[in-house]
Image 1: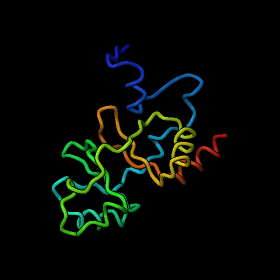
Image 2: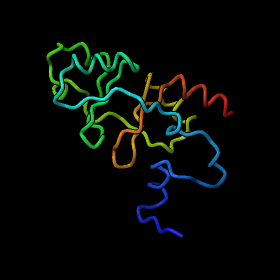
Image 3: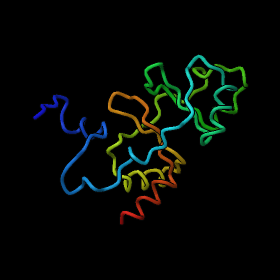
Length: 143
């Protein structure tokens, strides 16, 4: 037996195994694309834009430990190539935990017209990006 001090919610948010009636339902974590563009706050927008072009036109701004600081999408990529990411990034983006039900994610992303949403651990480390089309398809399949 292991006494996980942070608690059940943290356990689930970290994508740990679960039991019970909801254990088999699809969640955001396993469906999130892991291979996403990342950049550091001190890099240039031009470099970040190049990386993002290969993985959904989104770049997650992270520190050396992978903690999410911000996000770059089309509006931020409109900045000059030499602009510093920290100056143009959208700070504090809404993030979601790996244990959030995919049905909930699909509804939220559709309602807010989000093409993708960052999935992070409880301590803010990037897990990946969940794309709306993937979430909607998984939610429909689970119904």
